Length: 294
Image 1 (tube, one colour):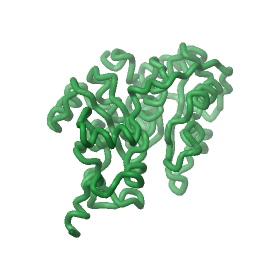
Image 2 (cartoon, rainbow, N blue to C red; image 1 turned 135 degrees about the horizontal axis):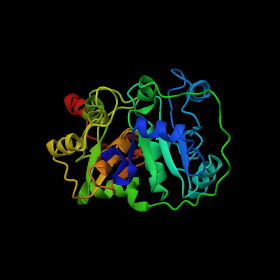
Image 3 (cartoon, rainbow, N blue to C red; image 1 turned 60 degrees about the horizontal axis):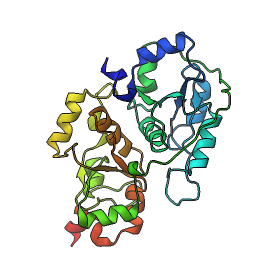
Image 4 (tube, one colour; image 1 turned 180 degrees about the vertical axis):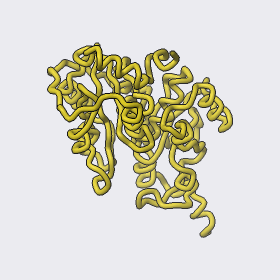
C-alpha cells in the first residue's frame, strides 16, 4: 500500500495495530503522542495518561523546544532534542510513529514528524487519521504508561529544511523559493485576527489552508488529490518551496503533503507569522484590512 512507501511518511491504523498486537513496539518502533491544546480547552498530558495507544510515550512539544525564544515552539538545540528523544527510547535506528488526538484527525503530529526529519532522522511516520480514527476503528487503547529504556540519539540539524527570518526577508526581493502559507484564508488575507495578532502575509506567499489536505474523516487525501491542490494553486513541486503559518506548526502539513508527492526538501519557516509580524517592516506585511483602511 502507498502509505507504507515514500519513506513511510504515513502509516495506517491497521499497520500500527498489527505492530502493537505483535509486540513490536519497543527499541525498534516507538509510538509518540504529540498532542497539544490551548490549556484552557484541553489537557494533552492528562488525556494521554487516561487513554493512549499501547506502548506510546508522550512527546511534549512544550518541553522539546527553544525555551529561550520569545516565539512558541521554535526548534530546540541539537543537544536538547537528542537528550529529550533519547529519554523517550528513540535511537537513530528507531522507527518513530507520531500521532495526536486533535478532533481534525491530525494537527501537531506533522510538526513532530518534521522536527525528527530536521534533526536528521529518516524513519519517522505520521499515523494517518490520528488517534480520533484509531479509536473510531476500534483499535486498543490503554491507561498504562510504559517506561521506555533510555536510548542514544545523535541529532544533526539539516539546515536545508529550516528557514530563518533573514532568509525569508532576502527572498522577498530575490524570489529564490516559493512560499506557501497554511493558515485559514481570513488570517492570510488579513481580514481576521490571528490569535490576538493583526494578520496578513509575507509578500509573494500563496495560501493553501492546511485543512485542504485532509479528508472529512481526518485522513490525508490521496497523492493525486494533493498534487492537484498544489497545481491549482500554481505551486511547482519541482522548484524550491518553503512553508509558513502562525507558529511553524501547520506549515508542517505542507511539508508532509509535498513529501507524499515525492518532494522531500520543503523547508519550514520556524518563526512564521509570529516572528514576521514583530520583526518585518510594515511594507512587508500584506493585509487587506490595512489596504481598506488606507
